[in-house]
Image 1: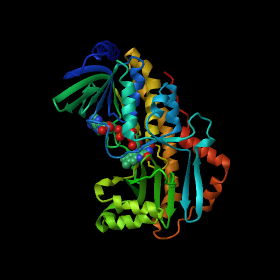
Image 2: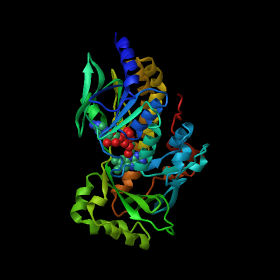
Image 3: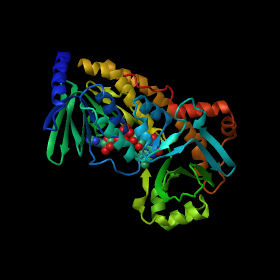
Image 4: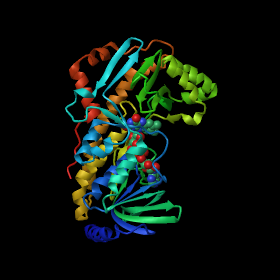
Length: 424
Ligand SMILES: Cc1cc2nc3c(=O)[nH]c(=O)nc-3n(C[C@H](O)[C@H](O)[C@H](O)COP(=O)(O)OP(=O)(O)OC[C@H]3O[C@@H](n4cnc5c(N)ncnc54)[C@H](O)[C@@H]3O)c2cc1C
């Protein structure tokens, strides 16, 4: 019965998918959230002629800093789609290796040049440019529709199955009915809450302040981490600026805020050479600084009948190794690989959705466990001993000197385990 209804709806959806927005629409797949996961899934489905509607709450992609890193795994996926030329034409910078400067000297953490790939580097591109690029490429396919300024507020449910969403726009309420609804609406997922799914959370004892410092062409600082006297900053070199992440003990923002910006600038100055430290003066307002409340979480169940959750909605990754964007995109690729057939046939069962979860839950949990161990045993003990020299455990330094370990680490971070490829 459900299958027949699904097939009929899909035919209607394919027809209606070509029309512009109307108060009520029908598509094969409705994706909530136009972030990396939602746009990539939309692109992959639309290029196969599966009607997709992506609903994005914001009016544009320009928002607070949320990470600029595109790992080799994502570059390979983009290459498989024949889009790498367009992506690499965007203004970007590259990180081939990542080192940590400590009180004990320089330590090489990852070297992507060891990897067997055409893209042995991490691309740094503003997320707004990356998302605009994905949206542009997806919009080339007639089956793809993106509606900006569309905030999903309700799920449509019939006989225990999610059959679409209700959302608010400036013009009023609208509905989309869909064979499959995908929640790619990020770490504070509204759909997850509406579906009654509870993530299992851990709260690493750090937060991160993100801000920019101007960069001059002759600057030599480069990208890398700096852990000195119990404090850590991460520096990502961009064209005209440095993106800086400053690790602070969880809840420490309040203390910093009370102490004032001048005190923060002073605290940060020792990380940088004098000419760059002087540029800290460009930080004049707290709104120039974004606070990332670090958390790590995962859902035990990523689906309900007619509904799948992917990306941050299904699992929030710690910022260690900066893998949130590529895990979100890999989820989208695996979801497209597994669900394209069922979507084309007009029947998406819970077994199909469970296959997506089975394929993605263990890599996510594996990475989260590694991140937890690195936080617990390596980063945080140093971070919390204020004003004391930062000591990395001897076993960790020994491991990092082994080429095989560095290769495995680069593989794990850069290409992912298992490697995800587009199969549709
Ligand atoms: C400060 C900060 C720094 C980060 N740095 C990095 C980094 O360096 N590298 C990295 O890989 N990751 C980083 N991350 C994590 C990374 O941004 C996420 O892991 C990644 O964006 C997840 O992609 P997503 O598509 O699942 O969700 P998101 O990117 O969060 O996208 C979700 C989208 O859904 C939309 N949305 C939300 N609710 C609704 C609704 N009700 N209706 C319609 N649309 C909705 C949102 O507007 C958003 O566009 C960082 C995150 C933060 C906050």
